[in-house]
Each structure stands twice: as C-alpha cells, then as structure tokens.
Image 1 (cartoon, helix red, strand yellow):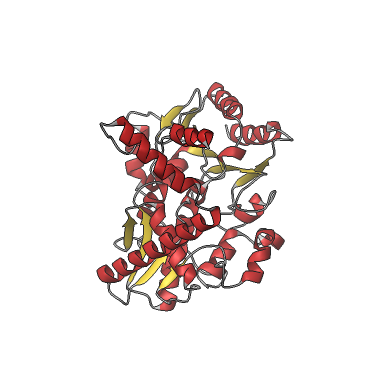
Image 2 (tube, one colour):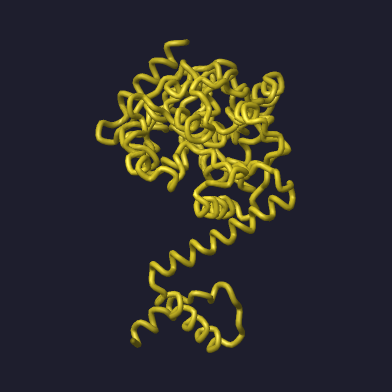
Length: 372
C-alpha cells in the first residue's frame, strides 16, 4: 500500500493545475484525487465518459436550436480530415438542392486545416458554426446522435461510413469492403453520407485568381519559375507513421535542383522544409492556381491531394501500403484521385517499406525531367 501511495504522489496529478502555497495540502489533495481516479473501474470510467459526451452533445444541440431556430438542419462530419471536408463541400450544394434545404449549419473546428477548407465552397459560407472546443464538440454531438440511433431528421452525419447502430451487420464487414470491386471513398460518401446517386454533379471550388498568384509567387519574394517549379508535400497527419523516409524527399529535391528546377515544400507551423527546398505555407485557396503555374506537384496522399486534384499540372501522388482507416494495400483503390473521379490525370504510386522507394523515384524523375 505504501508503494502505491508513493507512486500516485509521484505522478502529482493536479500539481500542474493548482498553485497552493502549502506543499503539504497540495500533496494531500493530489493523493486523494489520484486514489479516486486510479481505483475507478475502467468500464465505469468509460460509461461516465460516454454520459459526459452525450450530455455535452445535447447541450450543443440545444444551443444550435436557440441560435438558428428549431427548423435548422445541423450538419457535421468527422472532426479531423481535410479531404473529408473537401468531399463534403463538393456535394453539399447538390444535396441541399435535392432536399430543398435552406436553413442549415455545418459544424467545423475553430482551428486547423479543416477550418480553412470551408473557404473553398460557397455552400459553407455564412453557414458554419465554429466549435470552440475543437473536435470535442463534434464528438459530443455524434455521441448524442448515436444515442438517438441517428433518428433525428434535423441532424445529419455526412461521412463515408454507415452510422454504427443503423446497420450493425454491415459495419461488421465494412472495413473489408473498402476498395472491394473498385468501391472508393466518394462512392461511400454519396451512398451513406448524402444518399445521392453515384453520378451526382460536383460543386466547383473557389480559388484565388491566377494573376494574383503570379504577382505574389513569381514576381514577389519567392521568385519561382513558371513551369520549372516542383511543389513537394511530404506531410500527412493521418499517415505520418507509414510515410516515406526523409531520405526519399531529400534525394528527390537534390535531383530536381541539379536539373535546374526550383523546389518548394508546402509546410505549416512546426513542419520543416525538405533540405535544399524553400518553405512556403500555401493557403488552400491558392494551391491549385499555384500548382498550375509551377507545373509539378509531388506529395504523399493526404487531404491536400483532394484539393490539388483539380489542378491542371503533373500530379504525382504517393500512397502508402499500410493504412489506419482502410484495408492494407487498398489506398489507391479506395482513396485514389483517379478512381474517385476527382481527376483522370494523376500519377499514383504505392509505397511499401519492404520494396523500397527507388522505383517510385525513377518514375517521378523520368516523368518530370522528360518534359524539359
């Protein structure tokens, strides 16, 4: 018992939260709270956590009704995922038209990449609610919606997965069906998210005028070269642990520089540029016209690739063999830009650590340098 008490005291569960002048009182409170947290059974902790999320979700639901009226349609998708928000934007206008929806609000995190996607689609403008608790609000609303078995007509979960409790037998095999017979993420979004036909028309995203892009990047501080610049995008939040090693990107960058190209790395925040390249944080509203003027885009498969798909340039997309959210080896089938009909001119590759990246690099280099 004495060893357990010492371990709990060493953790100092609340020392960082509170500043008491009396060290004895501080350690005593830490000990008591630590004992409570440690000895709550795991199953009970899960139940209490679920109850908290459900109540928080109901409060958010009531708040939205108070702000936008009882007839508002509350729309949301997953908390994280640039590509998810982009695909939602592509078909939101069509879904609204089919269902005669005028009064609606779409939940978005108050920060992060997802927040920037909404600038691309008019259907999002003036119809978004920024969740102050970031992803927690969206998760809480989904917990409340799940408790109701997704039966509330004014709450719509727009995602590529069938809701967990509406069709349990389907969900048991769902992960094995991703990519089966060519079924892709957009197919699932249209079927289970929007209930739209697979041939539904897409909305057109809004990007910055190319003349402004030209002045900013080619005549301003960056001094890029038209048709002779390669944009690298080596970062992916969802696939970071399966991504290519830095050596691949450095070798690629070195080769392009030696061939007379200018190489830039699209990076934000703490992300670092590939050695030998320039760091440029490219806004989503500018990435497509910039890629078209630069001529080349090479990136790991991420949500950014969904946005870049409409660019008229040489697009080289590298998928990973291993994945978290779809079956291993099905990335090109399930999330391939060509297979999802986001474009038909992307060069797509699959990286498997067991076979290395030399063949991928050879294809990219020969394609880019063959245009010289």
